[in-house]
Image (cartoon, rainbow, N blue to C red; front, side, top):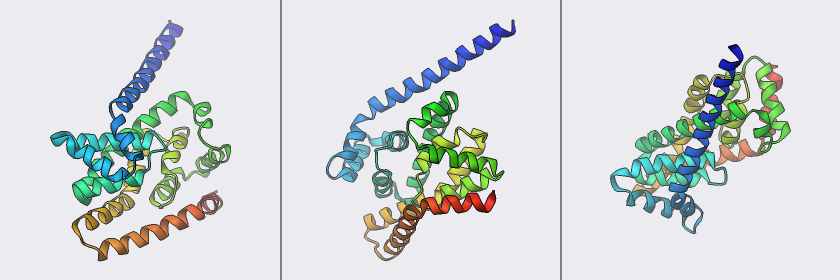
Length: 233
C-alpha cells in the first residue's frame, strides 16, 4: 500500500512538472512577438509599442515580458526595465515587474527543485554550484542570499536556479529575493521615468551610481562571493 501511495505521489509530481513546462512553452509561444521585439533594432521602442498596442491588457503583457526575461536568459533585463519605466513610471512599473519576478522565480524554483542538480549543471558552472553549497553550510544562507540579490551586477537569475537546490523553502526564497531586488529595480525605473518626462538631474545622478555599482559588482563578483564565504564560514 505504501509503495502504491508513493508511486501515485510521484506520478502527480511528474504531471505537475510537465504541466508547468507546457505552460511555460505556451507562454513563450504567445509572447514571441515581445521576445522578437527585444532583439530587434530599437528593442526598447519595440517593447513599448508592443505593450501599448495591448490597450487595457498592456499591464499583463508587461508582466509576461518580465516573466520571459527571467526564464529566457538571453533577453536583456535592462530593456524590459527601461520600457516599464517609460510606460508606467517608477512606482507602477516596479510593481508590475515585481509581480513578474515572483511568477518567474516561482516557476524556476519549482522546476529546478523537481529536476535537481543535473538539470542546473547544464547551465551553470560547477564552481558556482559548489559556492552556493558553501553558503548553505555556513549556516547563514538567508543573509548571504539577501546581500547577493541586493548588490547590482550580480547574476541574480542564475542565483535563482542555484538556490532551488539548497534547503531554503520557496516562501523564504521569494520574500528574501523580492525584497532585495526592489531598491535597484526601483532606481532603474526611476531613471527611465525621469528621462521620459525630461527630468535630467536626479535620473542622471542615480544612473551614474547604478553604473558604478554595477561595474564594481561585475568586476569584483568572485571576490565579493569568496569574502562572504570566508567571513561567514
